[in-house]
Image (cartoon, rainbow, N blue to C red; front, top):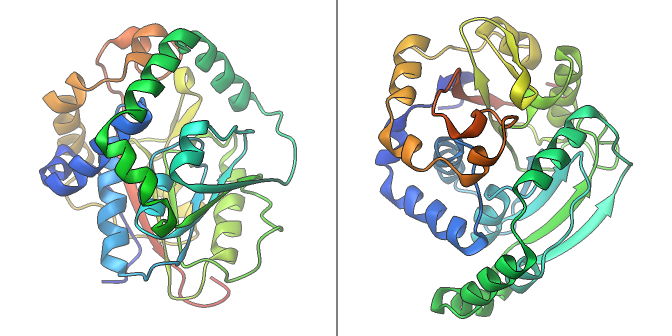
Length: 303
């Protein structure tokens, strides 16, 4: 049903075994370290994209993609991805073995969050010897060989360095769907976030959706360790310019289910244990917000 709404994402999503196995499969291939709630974000987005029944070659924009898994999950299913991020990105050898990727730049980034990411990455980088051993191991697996030989049936990925507030490099009404996985909360000002959503609306085709995940809270506040906003309902309505239907289950129940999740706690990525600045300081399981999925439909060529 095409209805603007937001849904608090809870461990009930883990019951989607097919999506969970797909995420774990690609996480193992890339040796990816996911944010503590990203598996919930990704399952919800996969479910929503599947409901659209888009054909192969459909163009999907991944806003704030970084090196996130979703762009690769979707490209593996034959979609063409415009992968946008504020920070500069390198294309790894492993990525080029599996996907057709090109790289474009629209500007040079300088903002505080990019520096925050770089500092965090330096603190968790494995040794070069370890990385090469991991790459060799994955390259020798049967699944890796299968994926490499199927490269020709995958969609294309374009890495575009751009500010979400200025997507003038892209035409109006030019993409079939938009996803964003835990990215918009890192835009410093609420007004700037609203401007980014306005630009995303512009490039989205009429009658098509955005599926955006971010942080939810009972009241609007800023989480300093991860440099991220935690949005309440009024803030989300302000950012998206519509009064969206809220989650009927309520925040407290959703938050408690997330906090009690054995799966999420046991699968906390190693990066959290090596830093105090990534949202779960030094690996202590203590979530202070819950993820939320926003479903927004563009009804006309203007909104």
